[in-house]
Structure formats: structure tokens, C-alpha cells
Length: 89
Image (tube, rainbow, N blue to C red):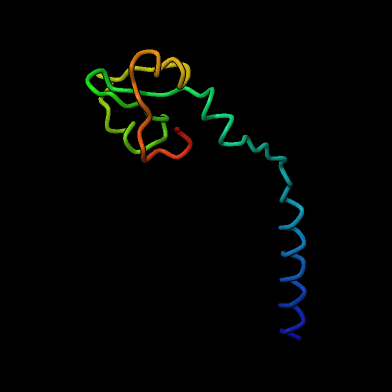
């Protein structure tokens, strides 16, 4: 009897937990779209630019940080892409 009550309770709890889960649509943006039109970060005293989420970007102090609206704008200003940030060419 105890086993049946336990299994019944488990089954009801499992069904109730599944009702709360709702699938949310996810939009995937290809990395190539970000690479050509995304915002990039550079240092006033450096010569390389990074995506904001790259490791090197977090090491640039706010005082020395320069923001560019695109990779093209950074290149025109004389900056080159870093080698260790995926998506930069």
C-alpha cells in the first residue's frame, strides 16, 4: 500500500512539473553577422580591437576604452583585429 501511494504521488508530481515548463522560441544570430556589423572595443594606447565579450576587452580600463560601431570604423581609425577573438578577421 505504501509503495502504491508513493508511486502515485511521484506520478502526480511529475505531471504537475511538466505543465509549468513552457517552450520559448529562440532566435539564433549567426556569428558572421556580428563580425561585420557589431560594436568593437579598443584601447587608446593599443593597436588592436576586440569584441566586447572577448577576454582582452575586459582588461581595457574604462579610461582607455574606445568604442567603435563597426569593425570597419576601427580599421579606418588604424586598429587591427586581435588574433584570439573568434569571429574577427
